[in-house]
Structure formats: structure tokens, C-alpha cells
Amino acid sequence: MPTPDHDALRERYRIERDKRIRPDGNDQYLQPTGRYAHLLDDPYTTPDERDPVRVDVDVAIIGGGFAGLCVGARLRERGVQDLRIIEGGGDVGGAWYWNRYPGAMCDTAAMIYLPLLEETGYLPSAKYVPAPEIFAHARRIAETFDLYRDALLSTQVRSLNWDDDASRWIVTTDRGDEIRARFVTMGTGPLHRPKLPGIPGIETFDGHAFHTSRWDYDYTGGDAAGAPMTGLADKRVGIIGTGATAVQAIPHLATSAAELHVFQRTPSSVDVRANRTFGPDDFAELGPGWQREWLINFATLQTGGFTDVDLVKDGWTDISQRIRDRIVDMMAVPGTELTPELMQQAYEDSDDEKMEEIRARIDSIVADPATADALKPWYRQLCKRPCFHDEYLQAFNEPGVRLIDTDGRGVSAIDATGVWVDDDHYELDCLIFASGFEVGTDQARRSGFETTGRDGVTLTDAWAEGMVSLHGMHVRGFPNLFITGLAQGANLVSNITHNLTEAGSTAAAVIGHALDTGAEQVEVTEAAQDAWMQLLDGNPRSFMGNAECTPGYYNNEGGPIGRTQRRGMSGYPDGPVAFFDHIDRWRRSGEFAGLEFS
Ligand code: NDP
Image (tube, rainbow, N blue to C red):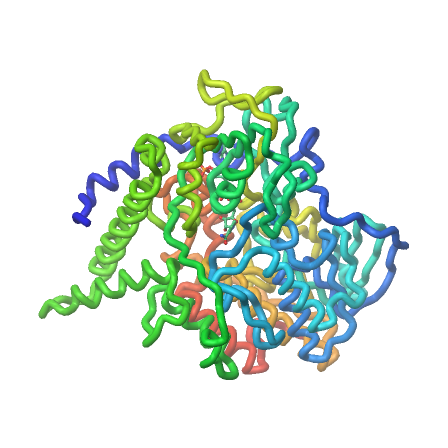
């Protein structure tokens, strides 16, 4: 492939980005209300009638996704018996409970994505596994560690208030419960609450409509395991959005619907997936401790480090490997010094090469040249969530499928019978919103409840100028509260669950220590929190905030990126692997530096 003209590419990227910049930024999205209020409901489980629960517990775990399950597992390993998961969905699983759309799967390799494989004795069926297998694994963790015991499912937390005199958190729920907890862990997920595009007239659509995270199989037919969606055989279907979710759902819609209209604002970059099923040979060399070794191997390679072998070998590590190999080649020229400029050059060249390949792949698969052209992404690979799929591009060769490219402007309007793009109207029976989840809105809005700490200060107030914490977990003024996520810790975006297993171990170690020593309160000191924030604020490698990128949730939708926005997506300056090492030593020391136990 010829070497791309770097400057011409950057100019094209700039032009495409500028088309997409909107003054309303992240405010362009709507919370589901009115006609769409039901999109926050649970279509999969009818909750059992039960009396309100009024109990004291050692640990309340808010959220039964992988964050909550990992904390629960680690607490059980430490012998903590008195704990309760509180979860809005009808089962554990979090994102994998809600996302049952056809084709849903994780394109982080299952050997590293599925948490606690050694602890549960499970080995995945394939390199990348489908959503039902991931959901089943979440259930397996809950069963293995007896986390269904006392769990409050189909239960939404409504408020979380700290009672300083009693040293207890009071958790209230939509089922009238009042749980008094010594410790609370909060794993409410970064991509949790569905959002809708703020398109004029969206309320007026008279046909059938749903969001991808609440797939309506009663209407479409089929199921999450991939049975054909026979209900769509005579339907004109529209899907708004072409992000990671849509890329997976579209191939299934393409073969089920009578007509499929794909409304695109920005194309995704879709690289090769090359999935394959696993057999016994794939596991022959796994010894005790293998999963930790694989996790560190992947995290090292994906973030630009060096290892002897690439255990996972996939699209996530490919770009880093290319950068690394380029640097090695450049350094082979005598007298060359390893400078930041040289590393930047290696990164830019590798990125150009990768994106040229991704665009060339489209031409080689999509038959109609105009459609192929419109599907080409014009930005750097990590500006948006990279996608990996081997049937998405082929879907546009299906006779009933039409790509409606809006040239960066988005859908113009919606009316009772369909969708407008400029002067063209598309009549639809069914409209599917693949429009993603709230990111960057305040914590209370995303989790659905407010957290009020010491002296009546809310988490929203404490984070008015951006998230503050030690390790992304401990917040001054919120004793005995443990946030289990990725921001301000490792912030390893390519393998979310790796952050969560580590967070689980950390929370369990601190809670276990407090229980063992009879400490009533655990709180980060002001000095430790300030020092951590100083370290993070000075981090030039913040993942978020590349203003040159096409707008998306990685860069505040192209809006201004100040300290507030950066803080919500910042991570340890030396990178995820260094953070995992740091936090492991911090836990093992038993001193828990920066925390006060009283
Ligand atoms: P995204 O937020 O990534 O995508 C939303 C889509 O809706 C974008 O294509 C966006 O366009 C489009 N859109 C929004 N408003 C309009 C409008 N007015 N007109 C037309 N189009 C519009 O949500 P997803 O659910 O796809 O993915 C969310 C995240 O979940 C991913 O980034 C990933 O982290 C995770 N995920 C991972 C998967 C995996 O492992 N394979 C699978 C699915 C999700 P634009 O790009 O222009 O903003």
C-alpha cells in the first residue's frame, strides 16, 4: 500500500471534524421521558412482590455488574458474610444484563475480559464470546461466591446518605427498603443510562421504537442467541447510529428486515475481528496464575510496552505493536536518539497506515462505490471506540439495506411516519436508537440517585469541578464509600473488567482491614487526595480530550475540555500497568497510605 500523504490526511480529518462540531455538544442528547420513558424500565424481568427490607449490613454493594461482582467475590474470599448486592436489573450482569441486542458480543478477548476465570474454573468457548455467554459468566460468579444470597434485584437505589454519628450509610430504594450499611461500594458503570438523540419531532414518531439496550424481541422475533427476527420480515426498519452497538446489530437486521435504513452521522472504524472457537489445545499451557499473566501482557502491549510474547494478539495490540516496531526500526539508524518527537512520528505514521488499511478494506468488501466511500472513517483510530467485525461491511451488500449518510449532520427531523434527512423522508415501521449512553453528565443523573456525605455535601457538589479521589475509589467527605470503576485509577479503556477486578481487590482489602481492626470509619486524608489529584492533573497522557478528533464521548463531543472534563477520564500518569503495580504494592503493604482508620 502506498505511503499516505500525512498532511493531506490531517487536512481531511480537520474538515470532517469541523462538519460535526455542534454548539450544543453533549447537551444534544435527551434523557428518555414521555413517549420514551419506558426505555428506562426493565423489559426482561417482572419483579416479584416483596416487603420492604430494613436491615443493618456490613457491606452494601450498589450495582450487580462486573464491578459489584468482583468486589463481592473478593469480600467473600476474605470471609465477609454480611453483604448485599442491590441491583436495578432483574439479575446480575450490568451492561450484559441490559444489552441483549442481536449480535451483542465483547470484542475484548474473552480470556482477559471475563473476570475471575481461574476462580470460577471456566474457560471461554471462543476468542470473542457472545453476550449470553458473558451474562452467564456474571451469573456464574454470583453463584460461585454465593452473591445471590440476600441480593436485592429489581431494586433501584433512590438515595445514599451518610449518618456520621452512627458511622453508617443509609441506602433507600424504590421498593421502600432502608439498608444501614457500614461500608458501601458503588459500581454503577460508566455507560449505563441510555440516551436519545435530540432530533426535532422525536416524540411524535407513531411507529414502534426502542433503544438497543432494551431490545424488543416481542416485536422483532428472534432472541439474543441469534434466532432469526421473523417479526421484521415485512417491516421497514430504521436504525440511528453507527457506533460499536450498531456495528454488531446491523448484520442481523440486514438479513431480517424487509428494508433497513442505516442513518449515519460518523462512520466507525471497523477492523478485522477474526474470531475463532477454542478447543482443549488453546488451554494446554495454562498454569496457575495464567489469567493475571495474560491481563498484564495485554495491558502492557496495548499501552505501548514491551513483552516477549503477545498472548492475546488482536486489533487492540496491533497498533501499539506497529508503533513499537517502527521505533525499533528508526533506532536502528546509527546516531538516532529516542526523543518524544521520534515517538510521536512513529505513532502518527502507524496510525495513518492503520486507517488507510481500514479504508481500503471497505473498498474491498462493499460493492457500491458511493456506499463504500460514505462508510470511510476520516479520523485517527483511537478518536472513537475502534470496532472489529467481519460481517458489518458485508451487510451493505444486502439488497434491502440502504446507508443514509448525513455527511456529519445527523438526522434532520422525525415525524409520525418516519425520518427526515434534509428534504428526503424515509417511511418506517420501526425505529431503533443505537444512540449510546450518558457519559460526562453528573454522577447523580447517571446512577439515578444522589450520594450525600458528611455535613450534607453531595457527591455532585464535591465533584462540581470534576471528579476528585484517591485512586478513583476514596473521596474526602465520603467515609466508608468505595467507588469501583476505572477513572483516576488505571483507566484501561481497552479492557474495562481488568480495572474492576483490581478495584474489587482493593475495596475488599481496605474493608477487610477495617472489619478486622474494628475501625468505624475509613476516609482518605485531604493531603492524600490533593496529592493524587496533582499527580493526575499534571498528566499529559490523559486519555480524553483530543480536540483534533471527530466529536464523540471520548472528547466531550467536541466541546471545551477543561480540567473538569479531563478529570473524569484521567488515569495514572505512568499508565495502567504501572498503576496495577502501584495498587498491588499499596494493598500488600497493609498500611493503606493516605487513608485514616478511626
Ligand atoms: P455510541 O455513543 O458509541 O454511538 C452512538 C451513535 O449514535 C453514534 O454513531 C452517533 O453518531 C449516533 N448519533 C447520535 N446522535 C445522532 C443523530 N442526531 N443523528 C444520527 N446519528 C446520531 O453508542 P454505542 O451504544 O454504539 O456504544 C457505546 C459504547 O459501549 C462503546 O463505545 C463501547 O465502549 C461499548 N460497546 C462495546 C462493544 C464491544 O465490545 N464490541 C459493543 C457495543 C458497545 P456520532 O458518532 O456522529 O456521534
